[in-house]
Image (tube, rainbow, N blue to C red; front, side, top):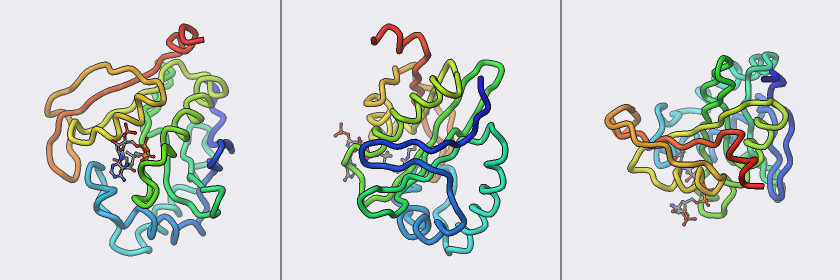
Length: 186
Ligand SMILES: CC(C)(COP(=O)(O)OP(=O)(O)OC[C@H]1O[C@@H](n2cnc3c(N)ncnc32)[C@H](O)[C@@H]1OP(=O)(O)O)[C@@H](O)C(=O)NCCC(=O)NCCS
């Protein structure tokens, strides 16, 4: 793999870029403070913008590490940051990344996350030269599974009672794409 870090990616409607400390207000207001967004996530909704600022203060220096892949999703139309897509687990031995993402409720249902995931997957396969990109979701959160399907990931299975999020212990659905899946699609 190539440890090239978080590079700018442009899609039809989005600029995917590194977070800046100044994104704290957008991040807090648009998604991090919303318990509906964090319902199936492992972290609690932020109770104040100070929590968001602390998180970004921790993240921004980590961009120096080429193994840090964490994008802010900036909506071209408005210039505001509406979500986040990142590699939450990187396995250099198997050249594999596990993805996580979340987005402002005001923008759900417009296909924006599939658009972001497709672009990030292309980057991870073609530029970072990874062999596998996976993601998982709570069985009770099928809309996240739809994002993975739309981005071309295949269902691999369900790990029963293997996860824990803000709703408690849950069944975890795993999906992935490997490099050879793409060759066969062309
Ligand atoms: C999961 C999530 C990223 C989906 O992003 P998105 O850009 O809305 O994705 P899509 O527009 O492709 O919609 C995906 C599915 O969400 C559902 N959906 C669409 N609009 C919705 C709305 N307004 N409210 C609730 N669900 C909606 C639909 O089932 C849709 O599937 P369909 O296109 O087959 O009908 C977003 O809902 C989100 O941020 N959720 C909270 C965080 C989260 O669960 N992250 C994933 C953890 S594994």
